[in-house]
Length: 158
Picture 1 (tube, rainbow, N blue to C red):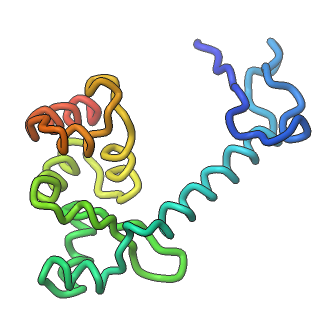
Picture 2: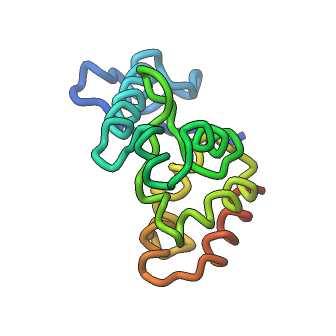
C-alpha cells in the first residue's frame, strides 16, 4: 500500500497544519489538514462560478440561439458544461460555445464517462503532461488536433 504524503499547499500559517508529515502510526491527514483543503476547494469553486467568463443559462441560450430549456437538457446530457450555481440554476463557461470546443464537449463527456460540469471543466482547464503541460483548451487554440484531445479524454476515462 502506498502511503500518501501530504504537503501543505493550502495552509496560510503554521496553525493551519500542526504536523506536515504523517506519523508511521497514522498515515492519514489530520482534521485540520482536511479542513484547510476543503475550505480552499470551496473558495476555488466559488471564485470559478463568479468568474467573468461564466454565463447564466439565459445568456448561454441567447449566445447559442436556443432556449434555456435546451441549454438545461444539453447540460444533463453532457453536451455542454454547466456548473451548479449556489443561488440557482447553472453557470456556463462562455468559451465552450466556440465551434472547435463545442463540437468536442459531448465526445469528451462520453470518453470520460461523466456529465458532471466540474469534471468536464477540470479536464479542459487543467494542464496535462501528454499535452506538454498545456490545458486542452490552450492546446486546441494552438492548433492541436481535436482527435488528440479526444484520445487524451479516452485514456483518462479508462
